[in-house]
Length: 72
Image 1: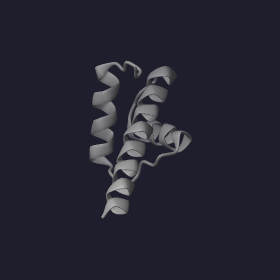
Image 2: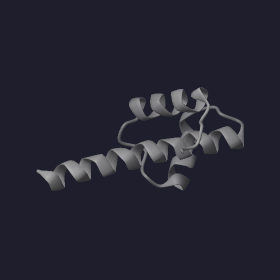
Image 3: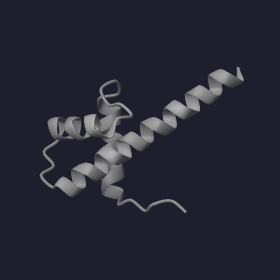
């Protein structure tokens, strides 16, 4: 079973990825700094959760694209 994430984290992360599609990467530490830059989240815990979820989203997207290119 996967981890349960608060919907607030998911909403913020998806909105950031949609707004800045080419800035975030699959590196957690880079995403952590970018979340600080593009939001006004003061809570370290919430910032890390958002950055981690963004990393997860992009890793899944990258894996899906790789599987499509290798299958074709």
